[in-house]
Length: 185
Ligand SMILES: Cc1cc2nc3c(=O)[nH]c(=O)nc-3n(C[C@H](O)[C@H](O)[C@H](O)COP(=O)(O)O)c2cc1C
Image 1 (spheres, rainbow, N blue to C red):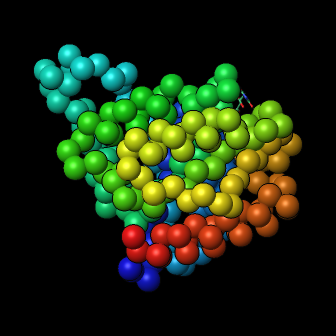
Image 2: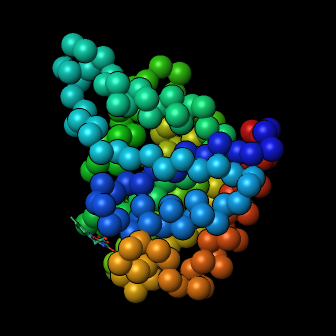
Image 3: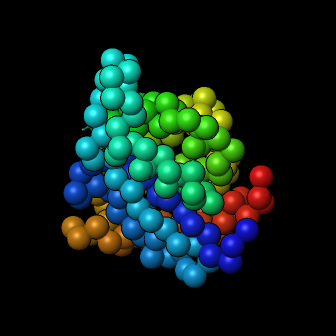
């Protein structure tokens, strides 16, 4: 295991002012020397179509993300919640990634987090994402969990985290996640 872990962080939101991307940025700035975090976007990934796959293979934008995941020591996914579920774009991305040879998520330590305007902080979509990750053979950390509810009251307009308690908890979560990754499955 390297001194500095290579972590890929995926935001399930495409929005410029996304709370989930802001959450990952807050984690990135807190992570310290022992974890380098690269925030990846899902923007531009086409809707999965088996005919397109047969004709031209897995799109380059997907293979690039898949190779980042494969090369990473661990992955963090911040998911929004849309209608009590995972956003279509995030589910679509995991479906495409599952079509890449030698499953990039296989035995990969993964942490699931999320932020929402509602009070439950994406609990419902996180549990659906966890189920999805079982299908991808990922090793998702069970606890602690991060449910950032009422996110509009916890981030400033520029995306910076303003809520002190959330910041303290994110530090605890990051320590647990680092230990999870360093178990070296
Ligand atoms: C189509 C749609 C469905 C939504 N459904 C939920 C929901 O079920 N639960 C919830 O807490 N928030 C819901 N929201 C509000 C989101 O929490 C809010 O838009 C949040 O900002 C999305 O995450 P983001 O800031 O990372 O883009 C929904 C938003 C959209 C656009």
